[in-house]
Image 1 (tube, rainbow, N blue to C red):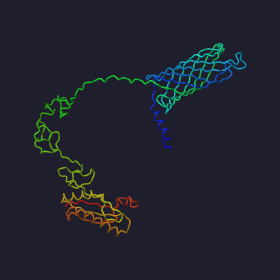
Image 2 (cartoon, rainbow, N blue to C red):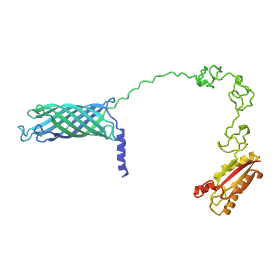
Image 3 (tube, rainbow, N blue to C red):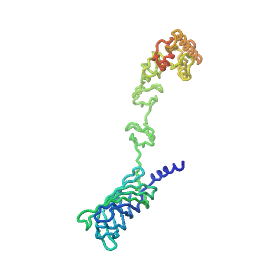
Image 4 (cartoon, rainbow, N blue to C red):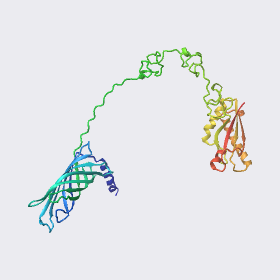
Length: 403
């Protein structure tokens, strides 16, 4: 059963790969519906023939030659030629326009002209030219074989029609055999454009060899494209333009070579006096540039005092700060959510604060630098009616105090 289910998938893959060939030969068979101007016994009769199509890569319109033949078509009993076997032969030249594929189907339309001969075994009955137009589709099985279905309308003005057109509608089906691959088009060889290396700073040293590609115009440079200048204090400002030629190594200077007072964390305390030069922008700091209050981001499970491992990094960072700045002490303040009695929450918050204090001391912080107090359910920072709010309220805050 599984093997049978693979057949449609394999067929679809084959159809997707089908390509147009140079030549197409299509044996066709179908049925002709005639208007009846010739007094034929049957207004409908079988017809068959062959169609030959020539394709090109450069045009969607292809020439087609076709020959159709019908035999043993008799006249009606009311005709003077009643009962005589009649054959109808048609040859036509058409232009076929092939549309883009719609899924696995290739639709087409065609129009053209031809000649029709109607005769019995004894003599010719009616010959004449006709115009035709039609449409159809092809369903490819492989690159070389496809099912072809089409309908053609023919209008012939014959010598026996008294000025009226003889109308025929033919519906046909057949198989299209394709062959002849196109030769691949030869592309012209690409032009070789000589590469001219750029010299953006116009110092005579091309970019690929220039170690200082932004030297000012007219500045003399060495073989590496760098300015031939002296900078005795190494601050990046040439001595001739340096108004402060003895700034210490590593000092940030302005365009005149003079020290720039920086406040990288924008807390109002210049870097030279800032003991915490990397505080977050907008954070409230003291005169040393350090945060007045630090939230350790420690939250507790309900009715618990254990510090979660997710808070280890925050505790370690705070402990290192206190060890490196012994002129500061920390007041650890514990809180709870609003569930439980106020007296129980007071004791629980004290236990949480003591727990953090003990951990900090265990990490090397001086005992005199840390105090702990519990505030119970006071000062909530979130809504105690939600689980998320209560989790935020079960917290520790640390206030830095300069000694």
